Every structure is written in structure tokens, then in C-alpha cells.
Length: 153
Image (cartoon, rainbow, N blue to C red; front, side, top):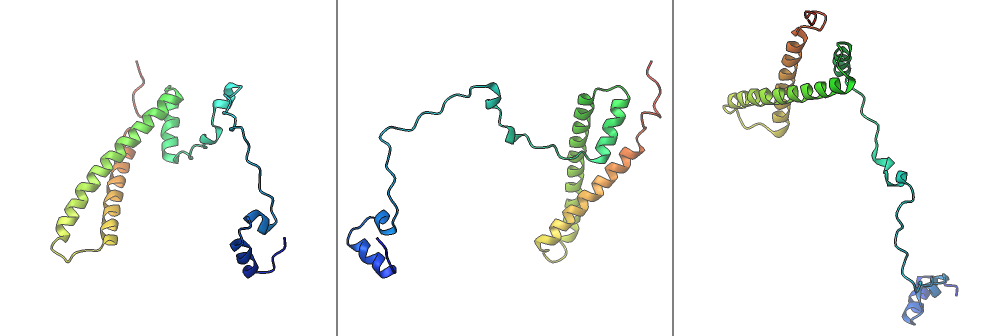
């Protein structure tokens, strides 16, 4: 059946003709049997979802340097990476704590002024965190390096 316009389509629809007949498409037969149940994987490799393995983000140059130094002192690569991860986490916690304290100090000082908008508060928080992180970085840079420490006995 060939239709030349929307009006003819609506009239055919009103007459009770099926959509497949109207559009010239044969209706798909529905199977009488239910779909087959999924089969278990045949090989152990089929159980692995390879899409979930994403490449690791590149290591920060400072973290990489510290990890390399720890490996050079005799620590295993796994232990060195775990140590650097813990140290980084601890430094982030300390920086956040002192950033919060510094932000509270800045906020109390600014209570005298008019109410600030959200962007200024976010900027103050970012500045406070940056100050704390730079102070931590300076302290870590002053820490003795493995070459400066005495040899183990």
C-alpha cells in the first residue's frame, strides 16, 4: 500500500489498518519459545571485564622522584609506592586541616565586611589550601635526603 500524505495515513489508521501495513513493513513474527538462558563462560578469560582496566594516570614527577629515591635505598617498588601514597594522603589531610583553619581565620576577619559572594569564598578557600600546600612542600624540601643520612649499620 502506498500513501501520499499524512491525511491518507490518518484515514488508513482510522480504518483500522495496521501500522506495518500502512508503512509497507512486514511485522516480525514473535517466537513461541522463550529466549535461551545465558550460558556460562567457557574459558576463565571470559570472566574478566577487560574494559574495566583503564590505564593508570601518570605519576606526579615529585612522587615519582621520591619513589625512585626510596627504591634506590633498597625498598621494594611496591612498598615504595605504598609509602609515597600514604605520605601523599597524610600531606593532603594536613594541608586540608590547616587550610580549613586558615580559611576560618580569614572568614572571621571578613565577617566585619559585607557578605561575600560564593566565588570569593571559593577563591579564599583555594588560596588557603595553596598556602598550606606550599608550606608543606617547603618543609619536605628541607627534610634530609637519603644521601645526607648516615649509612645503616
